Length: 135
Image (cartoon, rainbow, N blue to C red; front, top):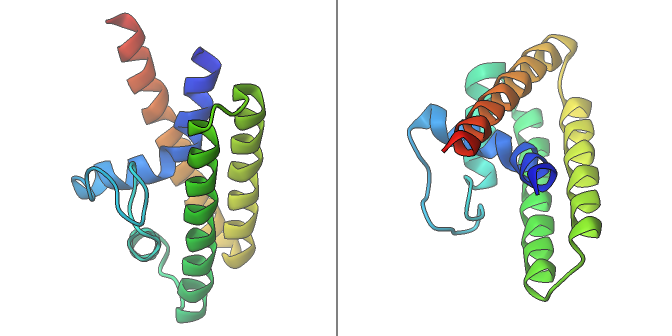
């Protein structure tokens, strides 16, 4: 169960981190999913940190839009009693694919900043999970 929570946390960590940095998002759902922002808001958050070009913004919006749809489909499958182990593997694969796609759009300097953002959000997620376990 701890592994599942960690994987879920990492998968959705970027979105949760962005929400925390902006003081929230759309609670309860909407096109961006229950935990996150819509693709345009995610790109805006990255643009603030990475100074994206217009072309990068367009490409990243498409990447995040595809991710939202894939997550929606995965949630629907999970509600139908899908296999948890298979779902965890899908989430890991989806996360890796997302990072690969995003990195493919970024410059070398942007990649370094993006990696630092991911490392920071991972540390924050681990801290929150540890706090939950101590309760």
